[in-house]
Image 1 (cartoon, one colour):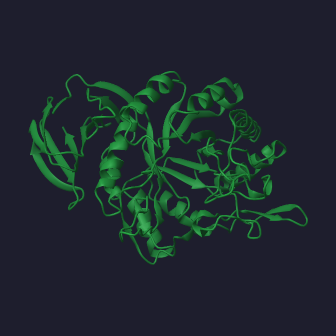
Image 2 (cartoon, rainbow, N blue to C red):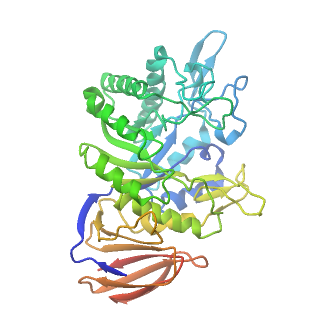
Length: 455
């Protein structure tokens, strides 16, 4: 396989990598919290710079259908049902707030996003934060849109007043999914496009009215295609929204084996709307077929990150959830979908293999690196060998090779003097495999990830 760096086309600038604190951080404290903060946001860990904090819809214990406590949230806003009055208690959600502060203290976060899966339960039609009783039906009446904005922006202002550097507000998450109905498992709220625009418009009005130094973010479409073109067209037409919105965030679920979806997204959306920065703000392997100790999970993670950046045009990349519960299946393996997996009380936890697929990018591609097109364009039918290239701000060229097939001989064409190779396989993670003079011919072992740093 030839990798020609001499005529590589420069693509977009990158704004970094991140993950979500939903829904694990409210259960994480003490030593585990310190160690996980290091693993995610520390200089020796993933060195992430994007943090997504969940402003939850809260839990009414007498009217809640979400069975798993890890899928519920504690809200700062209290609701007295008899008096129909609200009050505030910012000592709540303590572990989650403390975790956010621990991660901020690492000094690498420059993008702090407050996002919602649902409005507060007291503002919804059902009195629940898990969606309407009917599928594909919005769970907040229009008369409560401004109450929803006040709820979220009050929380944001509290954090800002505390000195937390909130940069973005994301009030809607995956609006196209059905959410609610007869079976619920988490917070969620469906929005038709016109409802989405009305909510964003009111948020924009309130941000401007309150003179808040934050931007809108979203709408976190649950798929690259489908309704995404409709959402971005409607947002771009609303002048008020555009005054306070510069990032279009979306999720790249359901296209794991479809690089051509990414080509289409870039050609039909990214190139059409240059006024936006495009953030891929959620992904995990879905459905998850890779258990936590199977290196296949790392290979898939690395492939998706690279394809979202190079072929999809994403300018940042954020994993869905940093930590999730153990999910032991019949074969005895843990199929948690996160980078770290834990028991409900964090008595036990460990790093999953997919963490290292993420690390091959986030540790070696700093903010303001530039993506390169080196001419490799996999197809849906031929997707086992991928190589992604970047130029860092200090002038290094970084190539990440993801080989899900057999051994592959690689010829690198370019004017380089030094080379460092960091390699991961099933048995070794982030091992410095070579450091020395540039070698134009190397071997990519089967089922391996290599980060190649060239000077």
